[in-house]
Image 1 (tube, rainbow, N blue to C red):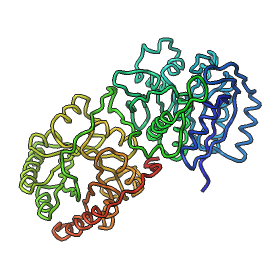
Image 2: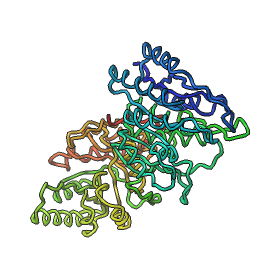
Image 3: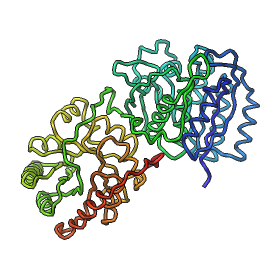
Image 4: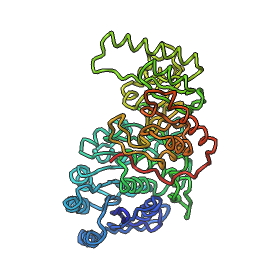
Length: 519
């Protein structure tokens, strides 16, 4: 299978810090992605200033496109410096031409409108060409705050919050965007980027890295996102990986001249737990501090649908149980009374057995009835507002959160849960899902990177799967259908499989990259 190809359409930087040089280094950090370059301009610059920009003719750019089209078709196009409206319209024409043959072709627009030293690269006709021709065709755009304002014709970049700017930019038909905020300052010491996509919205946050070696940061971020898209990640996941890659690049930056040094992307950026960002649930950039462990490691984790089943699995020695009773479309009072009775009875059974009981979804009822914890899906948590999520975390309930993708993992981390569920690890019929199975590959990555105990869920039907998940580092393995009608007969072998594998668990190297789970 040939490597996916990214075409970077940008300018050269004679200092080697930004432009095509930065794009090349960033894409090489995503092993298996190949970069082709379409030169739009030659810049004379060093680490302190840009002294000259020589734009190439549209004919020269067309010739580069034609040569590549004939032999190395792209999966993703990524733009950088486009020197004038004619170049912008040239790229737009080629996007349309290439999409006639490859409709899924993605376009990442990094609107390089000026240099950090203050040099301007575009005029008003070029900005209008961006608005008319590139933004409507873009899969993803990655401006900083000043660039976002310029694209919108704004002059006071501090007059609008990033979420509002993002909403206005997306009205130009860009499918996804990320307004980077690494050049801003905030009291919490965080580097905050605003993500707005079909999959998720919120602040991507990492600790700010204090360094002067930041030349090429924007290029590296956009090129990293393009490489992730080329590997099959959807926009929100691609931006999580781009944030991780850029953070590592900043840590590895070096100075070669007397001005700002260049960033240094490298392989292995996604194997550093400290680089995994958090994603806010809304427009408030609020992130819980890491939680101290309050519950025992889950171990074999039974999911059942009645108090009778809770009692049956507890008698087998299981010490982590989830009561999952889904609400009907129109719950009446009789159903609500039955649910309350089931939760109360289950709480009593768990206390008697010294076990941990999680209630699925119904967190206020769980709190009222004295359950140890609650498990919530991402949709349930998104349905709460910031005050309700704060109330939940202050309630004392242990919290488990479902995750299926990188952005969901990043978002779960912002609430500092007691465990994070990774799923579906194997194909499952218990729920209809659009997610691809995580497999042991992603489960190992989750366990190494999540910053909380990880519970494997989905498609567990054999004791060998329980053992494999435990060896991958899972602190718990969920079983549903495998319990059968008589847990007393089925559970002992499951407990043995988990405990023996846990005892033999070896520290495995972190996967260099997870694989996509949606798309």
